[in-house]
Length: 438
Ligand code: NAD
Ligand code: UGA
Image (cartoon, rainbow, N blue to C red; front, side):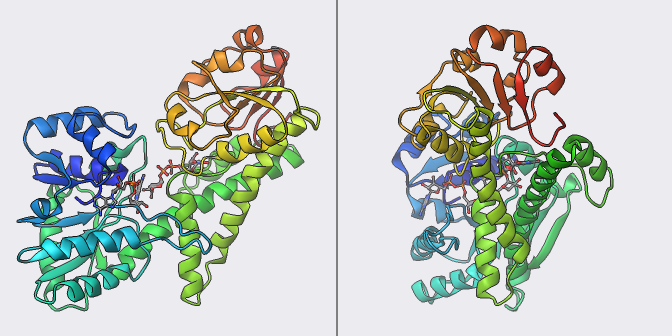
């Protein structure tokens, strides 16, 4: 497994749990040291125990020696990052290609190279060219096995996936069968659980990943716009979402309004799909719009807080609950809090923030002047306005009466709809949320 980040570490550990011997190769020295010392460098519930058990059982190892890991391997997975390229929004595949070249240089005998990273359509074919150019003598195949795990729920998502996608080079005689057989064996425990496994071509597998993430991002953006409309016409977005979701063709998941989708993947993958479409001469206009609407939404959320303050937050204290792009992660990548706190900071507010897991990662990306608090009530202390940006469960049970004892002001912007409007209003708060009648 090349790359020991979210995907490499979780997939590698879960394959080990399936009974496979896994060697994870990680080049970041801090991450590698942590892994070797039994510390998990990312926040993922349950992962520490699973890693420890598999290391103890001798099925899971960590190192930086790519040759040692690749030698004798039935399959080599590439799980390195594919961040957005500045400017054009295309996925940066340079880490993938660099890793593949390293693998090709040290491979011995038949080698199956599998992309677990999310890669643009055509990457698999490009990998084949790179491997061939680096090692004309090498017998190899390329496969695409995109990963659908969610941060915070990663182990369950990997162990009990809705589906597994295996794309192989259908144009290569014999290549498909051999590669499929190896991957079928690796995923055997999922066959026993009767999880669907879809065998397809390389390009199809690559596109499935972007289409899935973009569809979900579009669904969220749809409900966010419906939420705005609800506010204008006096409708309730919770009832709209629940009711449309009861139609099995729509489905109830991913219909929660929010300050905008963030994270390591939806923003970059929607941008990448628009680039793939443009380059192929087949623009994906719905997703182009999704990207633009989501960016505007994050900015609109900061403006909403300023409007709640009466148009000016200069000198006011704003308590912020939740910073990460969603609960159960310490990941701050493209979180709405980055945009919102930047606006509030520039507008002259004093910000007191708390997040149960993301305080360290937040420090690197949020305005310098933010004060980091020890818990939610500490963040509310002395606040004129309280803003909820991430729906951590522990915030749901905060009582309005307790908040009143700590806050100076009586204004709350609940941008995740975690509280009941009635109880906040009864307690005397000027309370706004998303898409629910005043
Ligand atoms: P990450 O940045 O957390 O991890 C990538 C790791 O690869 C880093 O630790 C890096 O040091 C290491 N690395 C880079 N080049 C290397 C090399 N040549 N040899 C060894 N190690 C190397 O990224 P991630 O979140 O795990 O994402 C990886 C890929 O998986 C991306 O394409 C992403 O889109 C996709 N993906 C991510 C998620 C998610 O929830 N994070 C889910 C599904 C798919
Ligand atoms: C997402 C997908 O759900 C995974 O299937 C995929 O593998 C992964 O991206 C990836 O490719 O990396 P993740 O980014 O971990 O997983 O988190 P999600 O739970 O999907 O949430 C993404 C964003 O959408 C968050 O900011 C979240 O708050 C937001 N969201 C989600 C909403 O605003 N409303 C919803 O109803 C659901």
